Amino acid sequence: MTVNDQGRFQAIISHAKEYGFVFPSSEIYDGLSAVYDYGPWGSELKKNIRESWWNAMTRMHDNIVGIDAAIFMHPTTWKASGHVDNFSDPMIDNKDSKKRYRVDHLIEGAAEELSKLDKHREAEDLLRQMDEFLAANDFVGLKNLIDQYGIKCAVSGTCNWTEVRQFNLMFSTQLGSVAEDANEIYLRPETAQGIFVNFLNVQKTARMKIPFGIAQVGKAFRNEIVARQFIFRMREFEQMEMQYFIRPGSQKEWYAYWKEERMKWHTALGIPADRYRFHDHVKLAHYADAAVDIEYAFPIGWKEVEGIHSRTDFDLKNHQHFSGKKLQYFDPEINQSYVPYVIETSIGLDRMFLLVLCHAYQEEKWAKEDGSEDSRVVLKIPPAIAPIKLAVLPLLKKEGLPEIAREIMASCRNEFYCFYEEKDTIGKRYRRMDALGTPFCVTVDHQTKEDRTVTIRYRDTMKQERIPMDGLAAFIRSKF
Ligand code: GAP
Image (cartoon, rainbow, N blue to C red; front, side):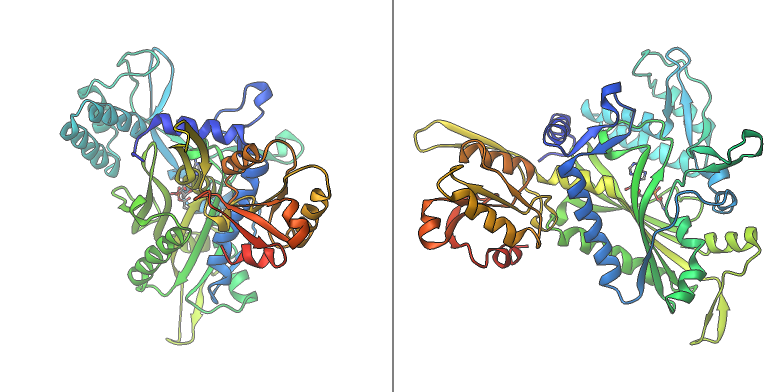
């Protein structure tokens, strides 16, 4: 697997559509840019990833509880959080094509082109300068860099650029039925603020003592300008966030703890550690005193999947200021009240979904005994999160085999997702289950009628063995 393999990425996108994982939104109307729908197996896989995260964060920690806050929030929330004033990206427009670009994406694209021409030093230099200008909010410097490197618009092919400007990424809408009375409100650009404004409600009702965490999974919305790359960058997406409230001064220690803890979750899913790396932020978000990305080697390059941010007391202090309500914690151990500091872990569910697909997708070829070639496309999704865990396949549609297969379905479907299939040859059915990432198939044949054994076939090795059908659910469970 190479990093930067557009062919492989396109194959994954096609596979995701063909096998019911991800569809373009409102496709019959030619889709909606950077908005996607999850199909039968996609929604199941997404649910399993969500559950894995939720269980790891809440059930496995005595001091982390969950909430489910509304998407709409009081508009002052976004003033206090800094999103009204700061949640923007530097943009540039090409005057000929009228196409708008995020400046960092435009420059990163140019650096990628340089790398393809083996001009690695120049590419690195360009990215380093960009990072410096971004960190200093130096828009003139960014514009000069674009001019200096002669970066062209992909549509018009010209360098006829406007100045660099800021563009706010929040979607707004109106609350209220009569337009004149309506208040402008925003679709939340991050789930975190629902946690901050509920800090005291949760702390009191769940009787939490610092350090403690609040976790949440939910939709977030951003008017991304360059929203290509399939579900990597979407306008409507889902975040899984956790705010960990701590004593001021302990942020370095907890930041290190959560970096390690979150990486453990990724690798415990069965995804190799060498596909991940940490990347420290040069340009810190308006709320952070330290920040790191967990990056994965996607086929489109090393990209962020999760962020860990040391958010100080920025958010709670600002909400305290804007609301006029005290958001403090009395710490009995030190006999002091304070506004807690926060370490945040924030991962995109859709991005994690894409990561799993990229990890799982394999095209395999091998020589058969007669010398001819065979091949398959298989999704080696970690069994614990695979959409279908077990396929139950009667060899024939008659002679009592479907009845036994139905008996197996009845004994297993309460435990995990099972799929019954009696159409097509057994070979075709195996291939289809490989393409859906089903780790186990059992075939019911005539021998099953005699001795109540079935053939189990393992997705990854394609090995088969005979096992008793009684106790099958426990056997499969033991495998993930
Ligand atoms: N509360 C902090 C926060 O929102 P972020 O780095 O902007 O931080 C966190 O976003 C994560 O959300 C990212 O690491 C990414 O996985 C996901 N994410 C952000 N923007 C996204 C988008 N447009 N489409 C899909 N996922 C996105």
